[in-house]
Length: 271
Image (tube, rainbow, N blue to C red; front, side, top):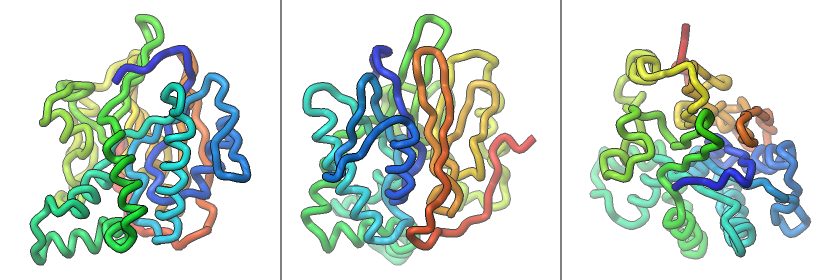
């Protein structure tokens, strides 16, 4: 979907149930949150989540995240769309598990337990499940912002080859939602596994912003930018704020309101 350049956009990386950090990041980007949990002070600003707002956090924080997004999705979009959700691989897999689109066997049950804990939460909470399914249904695979001929930002959850970027084909959708699996290619550096990012990077202002790869900081090479700065792993939650033909960044450190997940970083653009 193509976005209007009449608005500025706060593009937020992988939340993964880090609701406290998410709210603080919105405030840092100039929004207000009232006593009822509604996002205010939009003026000309809109919000984009890059996907993976579920999983890895505890049930309480996941519940708070889904409830907050659901309430504000319908509040902010009541007249014109001001809150956009991009679908991540975790939303996709949770959807498939809770709608019985995955055959359960020892392998898929173990993957569900290990990676997609939101599935269990939704299976025992029908009301929350309904809200998640509504958010899933209203999510986009890609968004694109253009300001003049010399500045644009394409946004997807996962990095992908340019041949797939902003394309509406099934194979393109799959590649924009999830890139090659790091867990299935352990020991392979991201710069080798996703070598197309380096090969296709250009020195121009037509950017591709994505998340998905859980990095220790913003990773940027030419016009390729990863803003998943590993909030759920105890690091920070980051936004890229797009206004006219400029991008600025904000980050909120992990607030220790829940136990962080753990990981070993595989660094992107590690040169």
